[in-house]
Amino acid sequence: MGRTSTARDRLRDSACELLHTRGYAAVGVAEICVRADVRKGSFYHFFESKQALTIEVIDTHWQAQRTGWRELLTGPEPALERLQRLIAWLVETQRQGWQETGRVDGCLLGNLAIELSNQEAAVQQRLTAAFAEQAELVHAALADGVRDGSIAPGYADRATARAVVAQIEGAVLLAKLAGGVGSLDDLWPHVRRLVTAGPPTDESTGN
Image: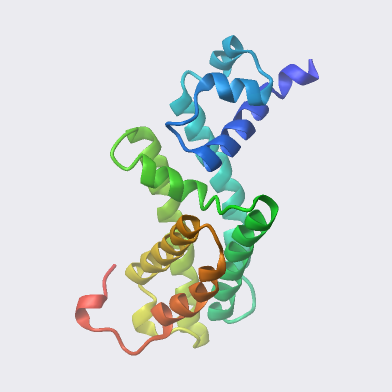
């Protein structure tokens, strides 16, 4: 009974690993079931399709990630320090993966977003919502930074927050392409430049 009760979790965890390392198109239901040690017929008791499982993987993965983002972006320290702490954590996550496996798997959400950018509308919506929430968490930290003096008022808008998220995702993607994490050492200096550079022009601001 205990084994049966964990079948859904095993399917989700196995799918998360396979989707992260192999991608959506390269992984089928049968392979997920083998990895999870669940009969294929039982798969459809829990999920109506691979798409439905992928949506649950995204939701579960981001729920766990969200906790880290919130904890790192809040606290008594100046907001700029909190943002640096988030970047350090994200870089270290990629570095640990590279040390353990010899490859850079990148960001699960980013990988799926690139692969499914023009298909699987329901998956796209979940990914869009996750990235939007990341940007809102960064935006809240930037607003804190205006109050504590570590962020200039012109850099506490949502456009800047979205640019920070884009900078993170782009840097991780290029590290994955290069097969190494050395380039991620430059991520924080570039993010810092986004939020502390000279006064922005009217064209560079927005909500």
